[in-house]
Image (cartoon, rainbow over all chains, first blue to last red):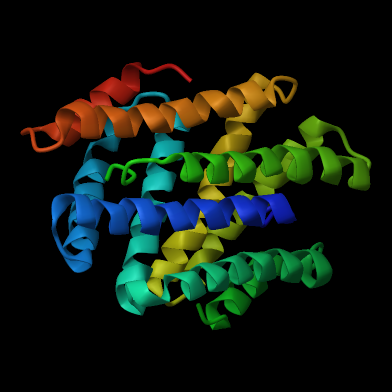
Length: 130
Length: 130
């Protein structure tokens, strides 16, 4: 870890996933429903919050965690999108990929095997702008 | 929501990311570190478990939850892989993607707008095998 050393395919995969969250999840859905982007983002966030409260009903702990984490991930991505503005989504996606790339680069090139490696990594991540 | 209606691009992206967790994060890294796949999985899970308690150091809440979400997603995927083995990893990842696709199809095709939509959705997810 931290993220097992991102390779190009993984970064490309993540970029596609993020783009789908914006282009399919927000832009297309807003058009389909005839509602504003802001309304769609807010509705998605509300739905996810309601869903998260029910996830405990999934009894397999590994499946429950996967579901919970993917939903939390999409939820915080939409919060960032809300903050940065939909017009800046391409830049946001680039910045996120850079953030994950940096997380791995810092760990594997400087911190792996050191005392307090994870503490130092989290402090480093705190300073990176998205 | 639940995850905004997966489209093909998103599934492809998530598949690439998850396959990278095996091909790059386990197979490639285990060769490099001269360790067995089991040792590699154990090390990854343990590193992630050490990182997660340090993430509170990231002040920005959306950034913190994104980081937590992606790390925990990888961690729960490795936990599943520990159980299923890596021999059939492509098939297993396909099953996970089907599970996410099922989650969205069930929500958008049947449950959206109904009372107890999220409660019912999690009941269906609980019954769905991966």
